[in-house]
Image 1 (cartoon, rainbow, N blue to C red):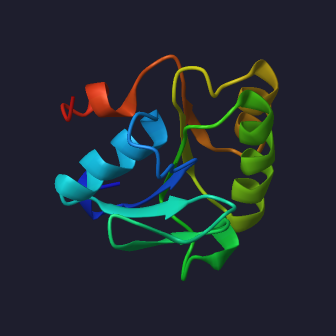
Image 2 (tube, rainbow, N blue to C red):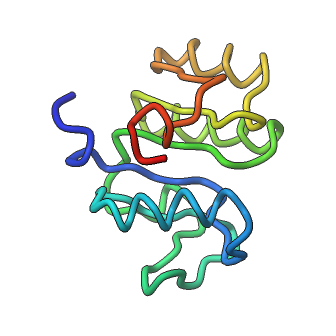
Length: 124
């Protein structure tokens, strides 16, 4: 899919609490100049960027979705990704479930789990 920095990446579970992984991942992707959107049901703004309430609010579907939420929420996110035609989902450790993985593969998505996006891409 080309340069990962050029892909549209949505981080699900962005938090305004600096100790949470949802904040750290979003912050470090922003600082590394990734094309990243934050998604959290509360919306608002974090690090001077608009936080979207869901994936449907984005101007276009992201190329990649990173989940930093509980497994049950990830399962719902997979449904939303399937409806939008998202091709790749990265389930951060602790956000995956067998059901979410199975659903994502059923939609034909490329699924990564049991690996940290930040570590695998040399950001951490």
